[in-house]
Length: 106
Image 1 (cartoon, rainbow, N blue to C red):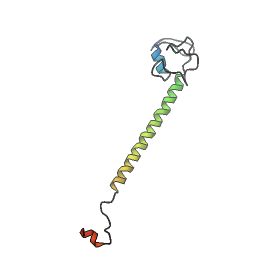
Image 2: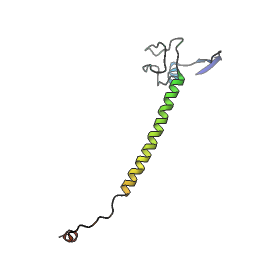
Image 3: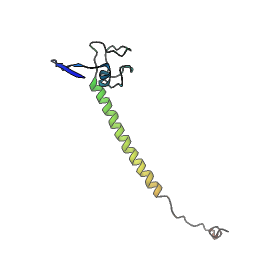
C-alpha cells in the first residue's frame, strides 16, 4: 500500500485488492464480504470505485478476538495448574483395610 496524497478527510492510497481485503479484515478479496464492507462488492475480487471499507471495525473486531484469546490462554493455564495439583494430591498411601488377612495376602 502506498500513500499517494492527502485529502481534506484523510489520505489517497494505492493498494492491491489483497491489501484492501486485509485492511477490511479478510485474507483475500474473494472472501464473502461482511461486517466491514458497507457498499457494493463484486465476487470477482475487485473493489468498485467509492467502496467504503470500515478498517476501524475490522481492527476493533480483531482486538476483541485477541483479548478473548488471552482470556482463554489464562484459563488454560489455570486449569492446567489445577490438574497438576489434583494429580499431586492423589493419595500415595491408603488406609489399611480392617481385615488383616487382606494385608498378609491370604
